[in-house]
Every structure is written in structure tokens, then in C-alpha cells.
Length: 480
Image 1: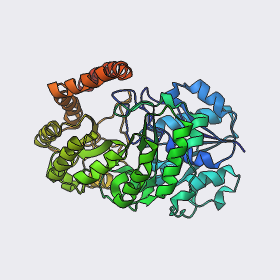
Image 2 (image 1 turned 120 degrees about the vertical axis):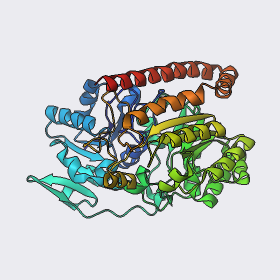
Image 3 (image 1 turned 135 degrees about the vertical axis):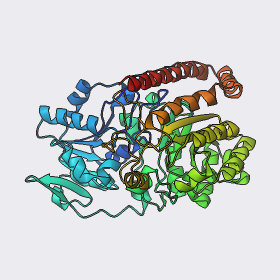
Image 4 (image 1 turned 90 degrees about the vertical axis):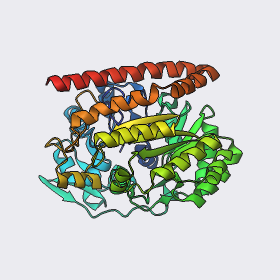
């Protein structure tokens, strides 16, 4: 049987159905690798991975390719579910015999609701779905496959849970699937060198952040990891396979959660002479940061979230603003670039905490940042807190996107409406970037590299276009 692992067409600039963590179209062209689909695809002989968004592929071409496969597996998400159901319906309309499966965090948490979302969905994979997909594609009876829910004779049946993978070295490398099925030059992230490649070295995160999707739905709170030797071997293989790549990104929730292992991986990467980056909590000391820098580290992606210590306590961040300040100063001192992420609309946001967060971000003065709206995904503690406290602004608690693909504020509080929270994202970006230091930093990078000059010009155009579109969206919301 032939299998297609599919990230279908969606909103312009939106890849929420891929491996992406972000729940809306981005301010600049950005695409993460569909690694969550690449791993099971690597287990199934003769399979194909199709990531439509980076290719600019429309529905008609997607359906034409899907028609040649017996199984189509779609990685869905809460914001992309409606769109993905339309794709599944279109696939079935052309070829009713095609078997369609949905995987991803939304399907893991709400398997019954996901199956009910469309009659075209034959099965969903719960939790970690790599081997679930493999066994489906091998033609095993659906009722015999652990971790799978399916429809039979009008009833929804939930098979027993599948145990989480403990020996992560049993998973295949994604390198060959990337080379076979993807055009790596199509993948951009504003703060990473281009072309880049991202991959996972482990799953799960010991942190307890109430809003974070993956540890609470699929990965778990134990950091299950590949061995340093396994990671280094794949990196060496990728270095030969993709000599044009300028940066490798470790997309683990928190790569630095196991510091002895992270140090060992860094030690093994040093002889390869590659630039690498990773997700990190803002709690590392200078010596650790410097040792990573000496081994090729270029950038940390750091979730600061808020400048209010009270807010950080409510979301169980586990790091204080003072720790974040020390960490960021150490990164500046070591010459490690930081891309910071912040969230507006966390419990219980007020005009004062928004202002506090903006001032905190300006004080940290990281190279670049991203501002998101709080997204209470089903399965997270934040979702349950919002449900119990009546913070949801709409009856449809999973409606995270506007019709244009922009994220909307799902939550609101007594002193801050959802419209005000949405508007504060625009003010945050302008207050941060329209200052002399960020502008001069960006200009300096443009003058140092011709390719970056061209890229920054494109990103600048897209960024301000995005802000304009957000304002139009705000004005339309007010008018209605």
C-alpha cells in the first residue's frame, strides 16, 4: 500500500498543520519543517511527504497527488482542523476508497471530536503516532493498532493507548526524507540563517508551563532523548547531504533541559564546524553559554512570555525576570544571538502588565522577537483555567483564527477585552522595533551580507504589510 504524509494547502503564510508551534500566519515568510510527519514517513517504504505551503501548492495539485495513494495521513491542529477537514472531504469525493487519517495534538486530545468533524476521517492517531502510522500503512486491521481511534458501523472505537517511546534511538533519521521530498531552500525562519534545517533530538519537557501544547498533549513532561552519538552521527550525515545548509536548529521543546547531554552533543558537534541553534530556558549561566558558543552555537530561541513576575508565576514558567535578565546579559557578553518570544493575553492580563512586558522586552534588547496572543489549546492547563474562570470570549473555545488567518484573542479579562489584547500586539511590535538600536542592528547585518540585505528588505516589506493588515482586521472588527 502507498502512503502520503500530507501538510495540505492553507492560509497564505500559515503552516499550523505542519510541525509548527505557531497558530497563525506569520508577519514574515516563515516555514518550519514538517518533522512530525517526516519521522513516520521514514518508517514506511514507498511513502511520500508532501508539504504544500512552502511550495505554494494549491488544492488542485494537492488532490492530484493524493489520488495516487491508498493512505493519506494529515497532521492537523486546532486552528487548521476546519481547513484540513475540507481537504479530507475533497480527497474522498474524488477517491472514496482512500483511507484518511488525522494525527497531531488536537487529534490526540479530542479523538472523538476530531472523527466527528468529518465523515471523511477514517481514523485518528493519539499521542505519539509514529508507529501507529507505520502499522496502519502496513495494512494491519485498525482494531489491532494501539493508540488509534476509528469509526466502525457508525460507532467510534478507541483502542488501548500506545506506550510512549523510551528508546528514542529507535526512530529513524529524517535526513533522507528531507532530501527526497522537500526543497530545503523553500524553508525560511526570519532569525535563522538560510538555508536552515530543523530536527528533533528528543521529546517532552520537564517544565510545567500552563500554555505549552506539546508536553501536555504528545511529548509528556519527561525529556526522552536520543543519545549524543546518534545525534552527532545524523548531524555529520546531514552535513554531507546538505553542504549548502548554513544552520541547524534543534527543535526540542527545551534542548538545554538535560545540560550534561547538551554539553556532550555540543562537544561532538564542535569538530563538524557547523552553526547550530536551539530552544532554551532563560536560566543558563555564562560559562555554559560560552561553552556552547565555542562549539558552534549561534542562537537561542527563548520564551520570555511576560515581564510580570506575577504572570510568570500564574503560568508556572519557573523562571523569574531577574534570572531572565542575567541570562540575556550573559548571551550578549558571549556573543550569542537571542530571539525572544512574548505572549499577550496570559492570565490575568491588564494594561499595566502589557506595559510592563513591553518595557521588559526593550530592556532585554534581544536581536529579534515575536509577539503572540495566548492560545488556550485543548489539553492544556491554560484551557482548563480559562474554561473554569469564564475567560473565553466566544462560545467556540477552539476558534483561534480570524478568517484571514490572523490569530484572534480567544481570552479576555475584566480589565482588558479581546479587542484590546489584539491591538496591543501591534503596539508591542512598533514600540520595540521602531527604536534606534534595533534599526541599526538590522542595518548592520544587511551591510555585512548581500543575501541578508535582500532578505531583510523582503522581510521588512512583509512585516509592515502584516501590521497594516492587522490594523485593517482591527478596523473591520470594530465596524462589525
